[in-house]
Amino acid sequence: MENELRILHLLEHDAKISAQSIAVMLGLEEEIVLKTIEKLEQEKVILGYGTIINWDRYGENGVTAMIDVKITPEREVGFNDIAKRICRFPEVKSVSLMSGTYDLSIVIAGNDLREVARFISHKLSALDRVQSTTTHFILKSYKQEGFIFEEPYEDKRLVVSP
Amino acid sequence: MNDMKKYLSETVRAIAPSGIRKFFDIVAKMDDVISLGVGEPDFVTPWHIREAALYSLEKGYTMYTSNQGLPELREEIARFKEKKTGLRYSPEKEVLVTIGVSEAVDLAFRALLAPGDEVLIPEPSYVSYAPGTVLASGKAVPVPTYDGDQYKLKAENLEACVTGKSKILVLAYPSNPTGAIMTKSDLEALLPIIIKNDLLVLSDEIYGELTYYEEPHVSIAALPGMKERTIMLDGFSKAYAMTGWRIGYVCAHADFIGAMNKIHQYTIMCAPIMGQKAAVEALRNGDKEMRNMVENYDYRRKLMLNGFRSIGLSCFEPQGAFYCFPDISVSGMNSEEFCQLLLEEKRVAAVPGNVFGVSGEGFARCCYAASVADIEEAIDRMGSFLRLHSREAI
Image (cartoon, rainbow over all chains, first blue to last red; front, side):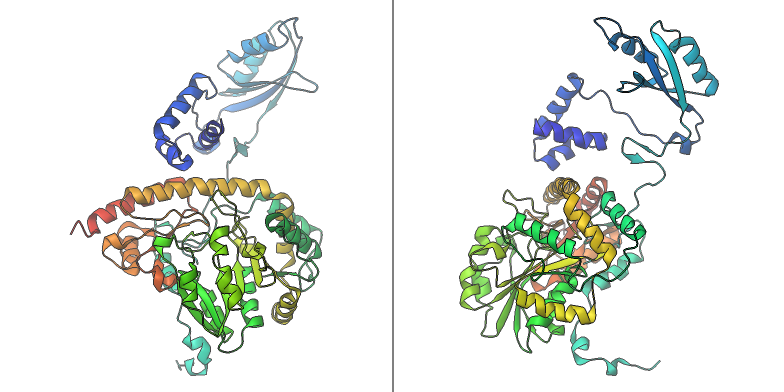
């Protein structure tokens, strides 16, 4: 269990790290590391290996919006079924159930403002139990998944010191 | 230009220039170097600590502190040491805050040594104890330690160097440059010699938290009868990634602290208040991030050790600090030749073992406070270097 957690922490920080390196760092057999990762993948603890990209820097001009959604919950299923339904739209990057004044927090990415607006009015608001939406467009990202966007790590140490 | 060297003091002239300095000058001129030559963490000081220092500046804490250091810092230090060693040091009388451990080393030597007094320094050793001894008119006596003993200080090697003039034994474990540690039983074996010869111990424990052994770091001060004999040095540089803040401290008998404070007050006045404020935050709230950093070093320690062994460099398993000290004799070169050629041909910087004393000859200090990618790349390059140069290849 402890090894699983350690492997997850290492992968969370660097998905490209090899099983061999993990094995050495944790003092495990490479075989065991591979099996553990496979198990975590099968159990859907590990869902995939993405990349954190600074799209602004690349020059891609897409827009991202965070939308607060109020939902009428339904007997027996609560918010789950509608949340799952919203998840299926490929434009939707993340969906979370929130405490507080609204229910779901959704992140949507599109090519431009119009595309996002169209999704909200045609798809999201049109869902039966959606009571209201409040949309916030992201103007600039500073930090995501622990990575600070405009301050890449720079080794400022002297190259040799006692 | 006139040669003004004749005006310099004999003592200073007699001190050899630092081997590290010489090597630094070569490396600094090169590009694309992967450096395993650093002697400090690759983490930046945790943000909450930096933020505490900023806040103290905002609040106008820009004045002197008492010579001994901020009372709240001394209290935190006493609490921290009690937790680690079970020993209670009085924050009023037995703790002194210094400009890094370096100042503390200097103060201790100057407060304790009379001309001719001998200081026993296990080697390979961090570079400042011997010059520090000489500057305080003492005599530095190297005590060899060996790869085969995992660079632990052995009683018989110590005893062979003790004379009637021996006064202080320097114990700096976990060790820079070897990564060696001294366990409780290793230390216990030294006690009869220390007591019999009435030695004081200058225990530099700056790497204490960076111990990867099953038993946490043990201070010799915590062994029976040793608290009074031990001048315990520690600081924030390594464990909390605070090298540039220059905050260290001494815990020792009130008479020693009084004497050291006398020198400190006339030469330094006090450690900078911003650093002291940051140090308070480190001790109060820094444990979690420190533990994370230590775990991270441990991963990279294993990576480097395994890497060296896989390319045919024999290396004992270091249990502390953030250095590996591989035996490079398979290359057929001495330490300086090896490090210089490795740098020129492969752009990897390691520190020649001989700069840490004669018993470091044939070894190189490699620091694993570097990124995983850099460690792996450095080992690849060293592997191909050895394939070209190792004695078997010739």
